[in-house]
Length: 471
Length: 119
Image (cartoon, chains in turn red, brown):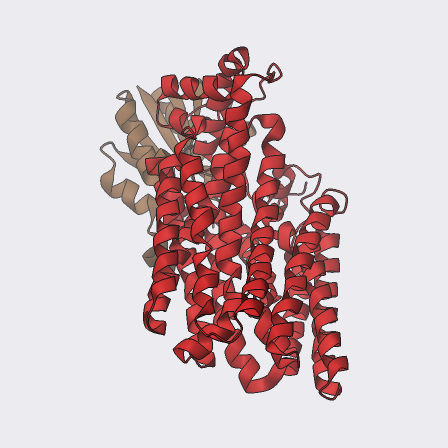
């Protein structure tokens, strides 16, 4: 309980270079491996699915099951991981996650049947979700203010880069040993390497000073700051760390009882809606099933796994473009433009598959439109939804609201991933993408009617709008 | 001796504050205002001529608004009267989210004045 909520800005001396700089450079390394691991583990199934499916005798339902169970695990992992990292500490949590990553990966690699594979994919999902809830928080808390934004952005880029890397490695391995169905095990086992790197990197990293302060361990927090900042900066920064820890505590004020308040419910409804529609674009259907999709559009198995690397490449390029666009264009405008583009490309994929006779023209047009879809999605809606979620909620409801929205987003992702192979097999590529186009139109209506502009607006103005007070 | 008023979200909030102010005046005491809502209290509700302390609900320890009020009573032994605002709730809403005012009525160690908003 406090009578003076909110943090104040503290002027800090610049962080001059010194022996501590190398220590801080390790933060960037951990950032790289945390994000890469997330990306690789979610993306690797894309190229692995076809040989895996033959090796373990999957049908479209068990394919959807084995792929999506990782995402269901991630939904739970994000929820539990966030709580654990508040209770036991960020560093402890990330070390534990690195071990779960390694165990989950090895379990998948050695799985004799699809049932065992599913169990370990679920375990892997717990680690993916936990990492998504812990790694960016840890990075933001350890990095100095002036480098904080850059390091967190780098994490987003590394996630898609991890997926791209998975697609490229899949393509290489597939084209070397294309006769052998067991190659999916080789593709998966590579994910042990970044897990080891994360573990070793994290062993040399200190606990988050902000977390230590939140536990009342101020002396230890100062000790950590002295390792990763210049000496005069470390002392000066303690005030900022305390203010941020207090602000962080304030974000955890709202609890389930507050869902009885109408404006709180409305804001959470909007955030959850954005999460759902981001996933209902089907972006992750491409990220998980791209190779299979291209094969059914007429590419040979070897060509499909190579063509799929373009999906990964344009996903990375899209994010890079999106991160620069986000702060120049209003959120609503960019969201509406994004959904218009993705819906258009859904229609064009559907029409190409529906109207054209089987042959190279059809295959290549489907590929081009899928790539354009991925690029426009990652250039707009992909990163933008995360940004809006971080800025739409007033301080005191933030933790509760973001928790619910992220859970809903993961669940929407899991449902789409479960249904995609089943729907595609039952109705074909054309109808599947017409379905995505219909969802896109609903998303446009939702954004137009419900989503407020958050760029260049204070939280107080937003809150007044939602409480029905004229601003 | 002090009067504590717990201000809930919604239109039952301002009448609760008004009743708290009237109660403090009648008893000739100070007023402590515990803001259970998630946004800052509207300062215009408070008179200038009464000694008031505003306490904001903040942090995971105050996640449950009823607990926040009961903790405040425990922390301030001079509080002898609790004023709360309440309104009719649907059975479904009560079953899902519970009722803060019901819990305060039942669990408060001091007498409670419950105020309804005008119909």
